[in-house]
Amino acid sequence: MIDVDSREEFKRLEKESKKFEKRVLELKDLRRKAPRLFGIPTGTKLDEMFFTVEIDEKTGKAIKKPLGGIPYLAVVNVVGVPDTGKSVLAEQFAVTQAARGYNVLFVTVESPAEFLYNALKQKAIALGYDFSKLEDNIVIIDAAKEESLRENVISLIKTMEYAVDLKHTTVTVIDSITGLYEHREMLARQIVRRIYNFLKDKRQTALLVSQKRSSQGSDTAEAAGGLAVAHIVDSTIVLDKKIISTKWDENTYGLPLGSVIRTLRIDGCRMSGHDSDPWIFDINEFGLIEIKEKLSEFIRKQKKK
Image (tube, one colour):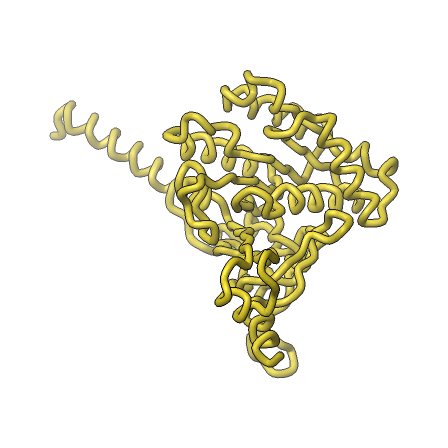
């Protein structure tokens, strides 16, 4: 005969077992839930730098195929020292998506909304788009002026949720996420994790701009808040610039003293393959990012000269 305590323990274990069953999945169970892997265009050569692996029908071997943009539903961190083109890339991406007919949520934390309006308009004109036809596709949350949004991540997320549901956005840009914890970096991981989970839940493809502290290496994925952002997000794009200031620099890069050389590098991506080499890029006369060639190829050409 089983005593009362034993029966209660059996029931408890049975209930626990059912709870564990829901937590443990076989890989094949995820087949239908897994998102389709394709690219969301940025309007730059980055669209060719993420790739998927497929089997060539003729040879039967694995080949790389450009994704055509950043991975769908990826949350991407864009990090760099000041004046490296982070906001330029974010704005170019937002305008490109809006021009393609997709709704974009742009959370501005640094620049008040009226100034962002002019920046986006200039990007659209430079890219050859009719701004009047795409401005309805971009919804703005002005956290630069609203301290309550910057200081309270729950309030910000609820506001973002309202905007996403209202406009049915598929793309989100936050410039910059650093502004949400600039004087309380100990909370960086908690804040970024909450926003990341929200973006995933709402199925947004997103760019998060991150600022660096002066003590951090300019070519690393580290930003204010340490590596909290880079560890949580799906991919990090590092923008950097170097001023040619020594004779050695002049000889290496083949540029005169005082010149500026800008580089871009994808520092990991857990959702797709990617080119990990540093690339040379310029911000052209119209304020657009133009990715040109690999840094190694650029230096090789200069040495030949």
